[in-house]
Image 1 (tube, rainbow, N blue to C red):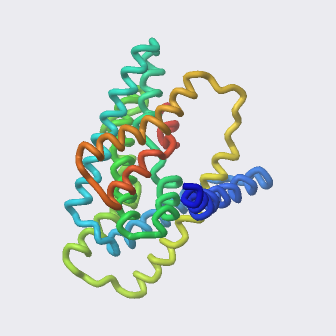
Image 2 (cartoon, rainbow, N blue to C red; image 1 turned 90 degrees about the vertical axis):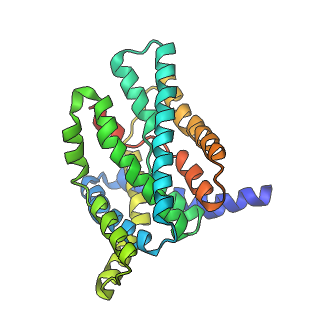
Length: 272
């Protein structure tokens, strides 16, 4: 037991927090603008990473659809839980929507991808599972999430915002290449691989930089409830759903790990 814990700490947790700490320290020391870094990450590294991982993965199209369905089902369960809590605590309409968003949508990118990579040592099957989780979460965030934050936009605006992100097109091209058996032009493949390899360090440093900007003067009970629900109940619901489905092996492990991610930054943007 102790040996297993030490292995997890030294091989997964410690490297992750060291990378996050680098971003945290640099932000506190230099106070730089993280928007360009975030844009390079979202518009360049993430699409390249998805492109490479989907082509390399042994995950079938059917399994990808199963992963997407699992995420949709989990989000629905988290919505039901959040509505029940909001009703019991007598939240206003605005607070109820905000609480629901914190429970339903989790950080599958800057947090989920690096943790998956470290936990499964870069296994293409596990990484592609997380890629599909990321795509599904973002798709729901900019459609269902935008609808929940009703004062902030419409379905049309959500789809327009979603379609601006190149990861969807990278995923589509990768799926076409896989299904047709086409070979990627070697220079393009090498360039995409270089970009994909940059994602993990850049994503974790960006996450650390974002955390360095957070200032907490007071933590209310509602905030603790939201954090506890997302970090504790989320994985428990995920485990229950996976057990009900009877899924086993690496697919189950990768999906369960994804359920424990903290709330996505996009939920903050939707409620502004």
